[in-house]
Image (cartoon, rainbow, N blue to C red; front, side):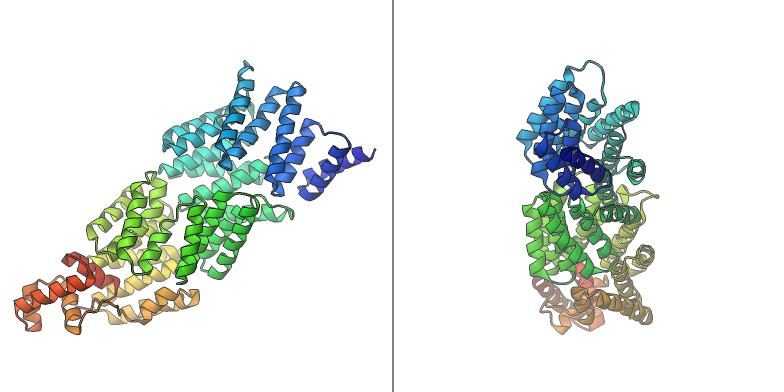
Length: 544
């Protein structure tokens, strides 16, 4: 009787998402009398939600065997699929492949089509994605969606639809991709999905929204995920990734201290849950926050930890090298990252940094190419963050190319868009460049308004590097003399050596020598690169 009571208590606790109680009660019942396959699945889910993945896998393997013994091969296939999927997530591809082959053999004996055929398409999606075959990955996910619809399986439909949406986002098909992501979330919010599938879909949808730069959606779904996690006090699984998403949102909103705390908590939870991929994301987020605050050693350590865990540390590491004054190293890093990245969605995450690094290194042609690619990848209906990013890149390039009149409208547009998204750091960056454009156009009062606003935002955010740059008033450590700085400003204004000589009442030969010295001290080889350096270090002056 006691075992029956514990079994009933465990089932009730499971239904109410009281995972620790469910685990304790079902474990007690199992010790008294081995659980049947359905209850083994319940206990497996409870221990998974508590972060005990090894126990989860062992229990699912027992459930698989029990279902086969009970003459329920399709239920056994379902259990085996999840065993294989989780081994794959952990990077244990030999065991993953063994389990998936095992359940495929069982399924092949079932002559009629079954919903499990759709589940076994899920690994195909990931295999094709890993090979860069995103169109084929989306097609495989679509086939799984069709099977789920025929059998009315809500779990498979949500899993496959969110994967298909993610693949479409990665190929740049944002509108249909985002529609599928929203559709996948609906049954989760309505409580129609199993617990583990709910968590997988929530996290996967938010991840895809990040790739699409869909800030509003990411905020909305992160709030939903947070509330779902908060309703389960014992929950460990998924909380790490949830905290990563929360850290990103807080960073965007300018709450950097809170974002760093959430990213650190996220890493602890991800390590506890043995989710190395998410732990790498948490490390990368810490690196970004340390970099923005000027904490270069901490940023370096975080980026390296992210890399050890399999997370690409770009573009953050390239931007760190740029902040450290290592322009050549930054350029090599961002070039390498772009060279091996083909999905449009992933390139969108790298191209803005590529523009910034190329401009800083004086590679105007390279910066122009990155701006043009950004433009090609986006259409008129692109999400606001991407539109703002493109406007900022255009404005920064025009300013570096000594065309402040063309730069100013784009920079003002970028600032307005970021303001509407409650992104104070991005607003400040746009206003800083807008101020420099005003100054280059001779509008000192307008420049002061923009630069003061940027300075106040940087101070509130504690963006130490940006604040130091503004407070330095455009000083640099190039070693140029006062006369060389004067010549550089005129070069940046587009003057020829003969025109500079006439304006400064010097011989053309003397100006030639000054220009050669400037190139040598700055480590550049062209007037365009010297112009870029002058703009990057705020050395341009208003005309006249």
